[in-house]
Length: 244
Image (tube, rainbow, N blue to C red; front, side, top):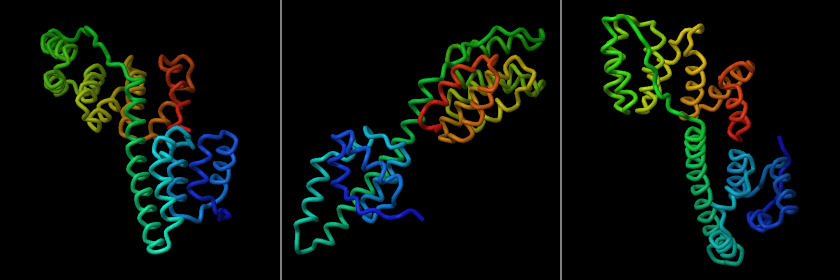
């Protein structure tokens, strides 16, 4: 069990404008458990956001919380009630912001690294070429429901076709059917020319689902092979704070 500290919320607020003081206060929070409930909420927020000063400062604006602290510090009657109200407001706000920031971070990272596959004129058997071309054209035109319909019909007669499973996965991803997208990408054979693309997009799907562990695992495997098309971008992604 970590030792405790009596760091106050105002200590954290005042440290935000002083780099040296902020480093001292943050180090104390990293190594000790706060006594006050509101500081426990701040510590939880910092731990889940890699002690990002800017995120914390954006929420703990001095005017809002200094007034709360000032009131709870100097009021004689109802002091405990006001303290609990202040603590409740802080913790609720921190909890809501934490959820928002986690979702926002994954969304931003997904948008940062994702590029839609432009589609390929892949030639198949003569009987299916027309439907495949129509489905691929629908995919290129962002008509993903039509592309899904066509690719699924083609898969009925050729369920292990890597081209179909890959573009089916891409189509599902574009309409945010993430679980179906995962299943389609996972069906792409290890020896397929679409394997590297499928693996990287699987990492992106898990990122979009806020499943950082599975995303990191896939990116780490990709990074082990310098010849992989996605080696560099995977290495860059793993440097993002959500994967630390």
